[in-house]
Every structure is written in C-alpha cells, then in structure tokens.
Length: 251
Image 1 (cartoon, rainbow, N blue to C red):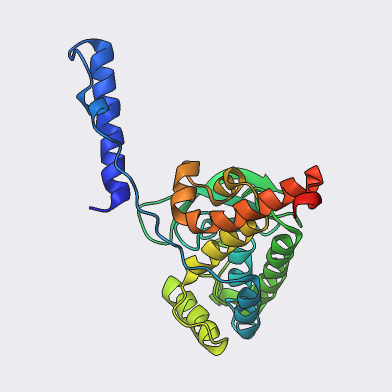
Image 2 (cartoon, rainbow, N blue to C red):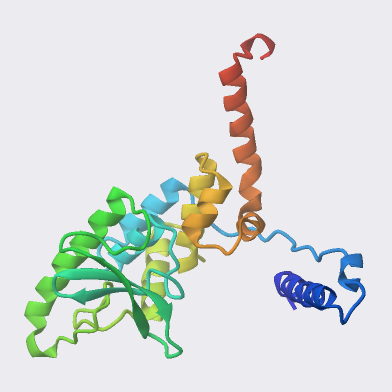
C-alpha cells in the first residue's frame, strides 16, 4: 500500500479506538503507542510560468486550448473535480456541479447559479479564468447554431462541436502534442494543476490558501505534494523579513 493509504488506515483505526475508550469497552487506545506513519514527499511535476506560456501558445490551434488555460489559471482538477463538473443550467445561466455520479461523464448539478454573463460559482476566479469562460460561452452558442438538430444539450461547459462532453483521452493527447511541440514532453493534464500550485507558492501565496484553492482535505496533503517548493518560499519569506526590519547593515 502507498504511504498515504497506510496513514489513512492508521488514522481511522486510532479514531475507532478513541471512540471505544470513550464508550468504555476499552481501557486505553493502544494505537497511541504507535508512531503515526509518515508519508514520503513526492515531488509533483510542474512547469515554470514560461513553460506554461509555451504550452498554451502551442495549443492555440486546438479546441482544447480554453480548457488548458482554465486549468492552469484555477488549479482545478481536469476530470475528477470541479472543472469537469462545470455545467450550464440553461442557455442563459451557468452553474457548478458539485457531486460526481457513479457513471463516467455524468454529474449532478449543484445549487450555485449565476446570471447571464457571469461565471459558475466554483470559488474565486481570476479575470483570465472569467474571460476564458465567457469566450467558451460565446463560441459554444455559435456551434450550437451551426450544429442545428445534431446538437446535444448536455449542459457541459467544455464540449465538442456537438455539445457532448470532452473525452479525457482526446484532451490529454492534444496537451501532449502541444507540449512536445513546445519541447516539454511527458506532461499530463494534472501537470497544469501542479503548475498552478507551484507558481502560487513560489510567489508567496500561503500554503493554507493554496490548499483551499486546490480543494485538499487538509493542509498536510498540500505540504506532502508541494513540500519541495517550500525551501524557495521560505527563503523569500526570510528575505522579506530582513527587508522589512531594515537588516541591510549585516548583509
């Protein structure tokens, strides 16, 4: 089992035994005598801002370009999380699905809605991410007119020219083709999410805030994945501290 699975199992067992001690079937929780399993840091592959620009530029001719731009400007997951769950509640309304159904490609719409021209309620969005969604909304309306009776009103934001949801494998192939053209092979859709996180951290965004943006269950998960970025962040933080305290005398 992976380190994280082992630690999750330990945490669950410890909680169960805590309950047993509270309810008195057990006198003590023997799990407290065991050291909490550690999770070895796993460096998440990510791109620099310059590399991201090269990939997005190489993908400009692909219909998946808006998806790639949205992913890297939000840090959302491509298919298992919020990005794939973005849907339209109607021709003049946007909303965000919040719960994935057991069947691939199907999600239950959430309650968040926005008026025409606004963006789905998936949390704070940058002006770039909002612009991407508006452009997708406009191009999709045009494709719907062109497709006529062949159009399928699935409600998804990122769709084919007939309104059906993107096939993840096709999006991945398009990204890999763009990356290869940009001289950056061996990246995946998740690389864009990792890149967003790394750029935020390197530029001084607190780990807790990055964790919330990514939707992690705890800040510990974020630290395990992006711990390799921390040294650079720490150096910048200490440099800013010295500058604020006027420590040039000892520099």
